[in-house]
Image (cartoon, rainbow, N blue to C red):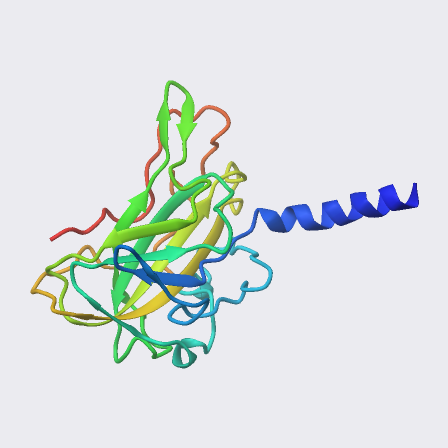
Length: 232
């Protein structure tokens, strides 16, 4: 009986963490070159726990870290190449996935990079609702990639992945934010003008219909939060 009770308690202790995830790996190319954990991704404060953010106005919404920029490598990538993130475990929660970029001044390895209206969206995987049935393209997946636009200007950038988990989003503050920032230098780029530019934090209030939503009852469509995806 004691052994059964101990096993039950251990299972209860482990199960909650299985739903949590981080994005420690950056990869490029096809077939991909996968970098080591936290090599070119700023090590997030939830690296050990996987715990999400729940306040969309928090300064931590930018990259979920403090003072790790200078400790993180900046990886050089050609415009037009594939860039992606790999999570430590498959994304368990239903939700909305997006990737943002920001021109990093003065460098990607500067803690001040990403300040102000400098962020633009480059990819997203949005839920869809058909005849009352939800589909979450990011759920159960572990790798998320996009192609760097050929017209993207040269320079240092932050690449930020963000998953908004919606399983408890029916009330304000229930949405969970899982995110991380990679550091890259783009070469052989073009003369495009990324837009629209937004600030993080400042992008969300938490009241947006794609964040404050009930995926279990009454919702017949999904509106992705944030700006549209920028293309050349």
